[in-house]
Image (cartoon, rainbow, N blue to C red):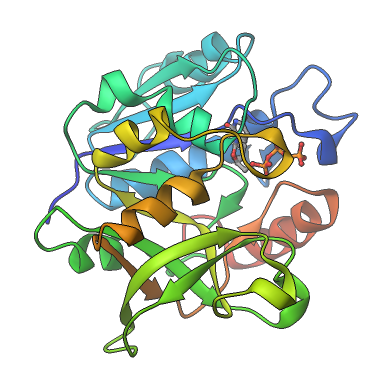
Length: 259
Ligand code: UTP
């Protein structure tokens, strides 16, 4: 299944990165030699996307657009068009994704959280695309986590055994905690979503933290029987917190961002 569009939500408050994010949007914080957002656009381009829709707040749109266009296209990004779209208020990740609905229209799309960078040589998007061979099934990137993470991420409901890294899913729960966790397979910030998710998000009420949660819409996709997971071999690097940013900078700086 070839996927030609990617949505990159980057309009969060960035409170963990204060004071750096008082003026500079989190997506434009430098990691080694380029802003964080460039890593996601590069990753989407490597997976064959021709269009990257970056969801930004009111202030960041022109900066993001300028970064990708100012002296002509960046090397390696000649074939991908970067289009900012504004999320007027940070009402949650699900709300951010729905801001891209009109631009995505009826296409399946990759969704890449801008807090996470894949390790060099460890792309996950091709495996997600391969898992959705009919284009009607959404495919979640997963990692197996220890119990301490059950209050931090969304966790999925498996409905089959794992075969070649893939499994069928019946739903997902945001930050379930040890008592309600349906499994130890957590969502890690890379998704292949079918456009069906937009109509679900329209009807999704605010959940955990009063935000419109993408996990609640993913849960509905599972209940409709059109959800799979793929278990990644390695973690993604986290650039949404100071400690994560230091670690990611060391890792990418040592190995080389382009390796
Ligand atoms: P996070 O909740 O981790 O990002 O959202 P945040 O809100 O920026 O983080 P802190 O806790 O305040 O530091 C995960 C992803 O979803 C995007 C974020 O930009 C990040 O890529 N997001 C989140 C939005 O685009 N809009 C939102 O309303 C919320």
